[in-house]
Amino acid sequence: MARITIVGKGSMGDAIGSVFAAGGSDVSYVTRGDAGATIEGDIVVLAVPYPEVDGIIAAYGAQLAGKTVVDITNPLDFSTFDSLVVPAGGSAAAEIQAKLPESHVLKAFNTTFAATLASKQLGGVPTTVLVAGDDADAKAALVEAITAGGVSAIDAGALRRARELEALGFLQLTLAVGEKVGWNAGFAVIR
Image (cartoon, rainbow, N blue to C red; front, side):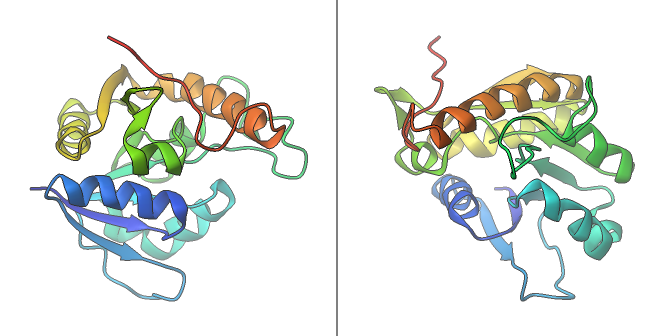
């Protein structure tokens, strides 16, 4: 059983937490009102918009050392929904890893919507979470916790693959904001 702390309790934080809880993981939450809270989990999910990440690192960075930190963000320019705000060739996950060198940063959940995590289905197939990161043990533990909760998970490769995952998440969000797809849509992986 994994011990997981989710920072943020919006729709994504709730949906991710429900998947982990369904798989038997011990899930706790830290929200804005929990100043000075202790991060209990060995896996910490940053279920917040990208602009909030630096504040979380400032507040909890020391507690994140040695832990697996899961970045679910899509680093969009939220004023235009027209571009990513990280350098070309980079990713939010890589920037977080640089700021948390003693943590194992993974990219996951950014290519799924809360509705598809809650239903655990997308087009009649299990919702798929793509996971990228450089630490094989951290990825394996996250994949195990996700699949125990009834959702599919695929190791998408090294942390440098976060760039492609963020581009895919960006595309999905712009399609939803442009009302070309619903917030219960997504990309399914059929194996």
